[in-house]
Length: 402
Image 1 (cartoon, helix red, strand yellow):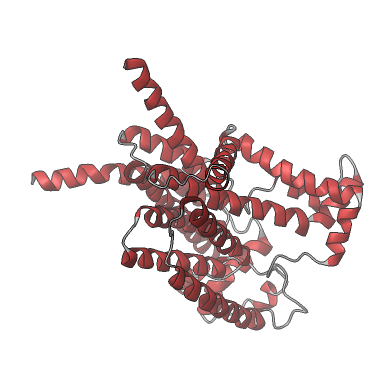
Image 2 (cartoon, one colour):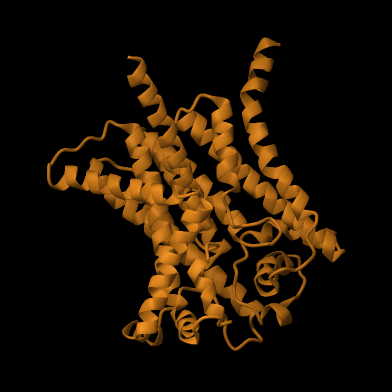
């Protein structure tokens, strides 16, 4: 009986993290009326529609491609629920569950991996991180699933850093690759995960002289899986958009025409406004903490680079530092690549907005404060900041008491 009560008490924090993340989202999801963003949401839902043998192609073909990996899981709901309002609200409740599971993973990492043993503090950090977001559960976007995938990747990265046994490293490498491949079915822009993974694996090997992943498992699974996913996606697109002249939003499209705008003043301004505007708005919604995370991770990378290449000293025994390095650099790279790519893909519409002057209604102004694309990468960085602040406070308290 005592063991059972102890087990229940140990799980209480996880239950609270889930419920506090879910219940407010549940309330707002149940007030929603379909649809807020017609093009994006219809295209996102179409995965479930397609695999439930229904046909929205005539409508969806007017929209861009927004993946199918998330909504395919809702195929049974699409078959069973006929009332459009109830169906929409049920889908939104599911997005709230996804974000609440992400909160549970965050709580686990803070408490079990980073060692914040005070459950109340860990819970407060988790809830704060969970609600610093622009991805609301009143719209059916892919980003809900991508936020959960990012937290799963964060957990797997931690396991890879802390694992020394080759068999376990191979297993966690497999999970890592499968998460990134599944993300490709959710949205094509998640190739950022793969690019970031390759760079972090290389940096980790150079700066710590340690293997982070099983290279053979990573290489074979990533290459084979990527080709398979791309083939399956093309088949899906060819069926759904068969009546359309082309499919929008399938990849990052940076052609010569867009690059030529970098030779113009408005083109250069639009890129700079997008980059610094998004960084600024991310700082605003987090009370400056995301800027702290960015600086913290960049300084750590610079310091480790100096140690490895200038001082020629390799210090790989600090597991906590390696966790910060891997998780921080991975999500900073994802964020940086996303902002940079958007500054170029939106350069034409953003340049038109600048040319339109004050009061313009050009759609491109949206790029200057648009956080939706990079939001899945930001919450793990916030976690690193909160954990650092707590650890620094404890160290300061120890020094004062000694």
